[in-house]
Length: 90
Image 1 (spheres, helix red, strand yellow):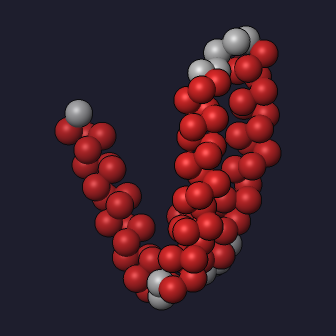
Image 2 (image 1 turned 45 degrees about the vertical axis):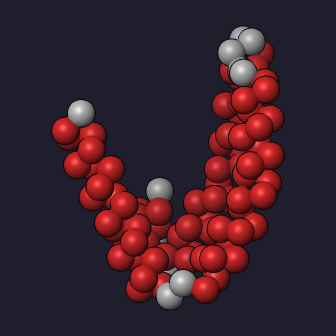
Image 3 (image 1 turned 135 degrees about the vertical axis):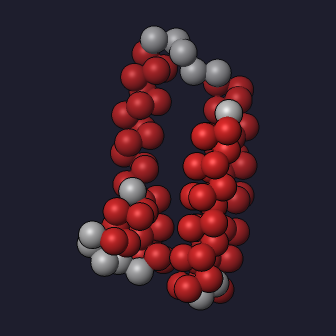
């Protein structure tokens, strides 16, 4: 979603990341409820991951505020290339 927002909507990297994160909230809630209704959720793991996210999200947002838009674009591009290569090689 981030590359689409940056290229087609012409959002800055920061704005694209923030918008993408906001969009995840309802998407994740609907998906989690659907899986929970089928008893497919590992509750202990989900709670542990949620606690980590509650701590990590503000730290990530604070770090994001300190990074220039250009550096963020470069880092995200490198990450996309690395993930793409890993997927091709596996």
